[in-house]
Image 1 (tube, helix red, strand yellow):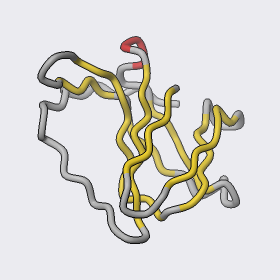
Image 2 (cartoon, rainbow, N blue to C red):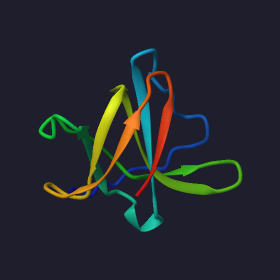
Image 3 (cartoon, one colour):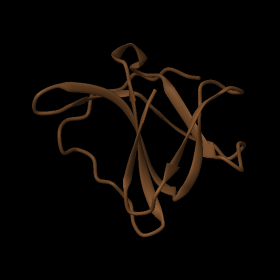
Length: 102
């Protein structure tokens, strides 16, 4: 996994590209994971990975740390802990945002 340096996102600064067959995945993490690159792949195609880095997201009443990955085709996904170890699985439904806790 790679670590990235990025600026925090402000409230309302993200537009999601989701629809009938596409979804978004939010992976919540602890603040110490800031910059950590997290990978996901369809369960049946582990070599087809996409990733994003953990960033702080400033909300009206608090700051959270998370990864936002979108658009993704609906279906089951593996969340990877590292290059070879799954952290867990999650099922994405088209037209919605699914949350996963790291």
